[in-house]
Image (cartoon, rainbow, N blue to C red; front, side):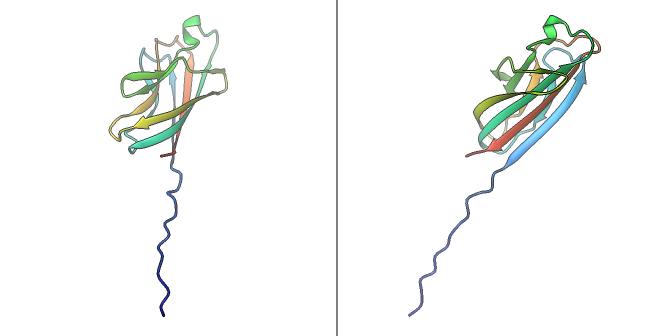
Length: 124
């Protein structure tokens, strides 16, 4: 008698997407790091942001936000001085047609460098 065949599917591998960028004196609302139309699904999102340079102005502090398309979903993001500070955003659901980005809210001061790294791990 033949044994029944059973098909076992492995769970999907975790999909980790990341992007980063740097801008000096960015314009208001400028994206620093953008994930362009990630696949539809749920993602655990982390943002890493930094400001460096001589004498950042008060407006350079707390000047990062996470956007889903054009809509802010987390603001302000933590930032480090000369090194990246991490912000755990949590779960973000994406539709496969919308960008996810870290943008500046207001214009950056001349000679001040803004850095950002965006990491999204697919969880569903």
